[in-house]
Length: 80
Image 1 (tube, rainbow, N blue to C red):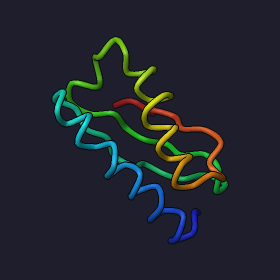
Image 2: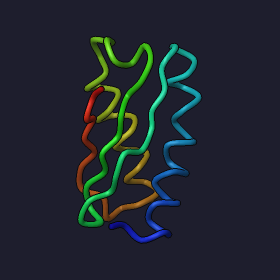
Image 3: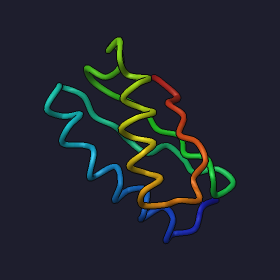
């Protein structure tokens, strides 16, 4: 179970990137934070079938989350 402070930092990061995903018809939601270093997210909408969603996840989402919460080591999309 992640601390409330860490959860707030990750949510803030997702809020920062969400408008970019929504502009392409997609979205993202936080599923869980495990061991205070692994974030699980769910890409939604157009992001689900997008051919570049792994690149978006690593270069956009993961980078933004790490900027807000440097202790995060990985971001995983759990899909639908």
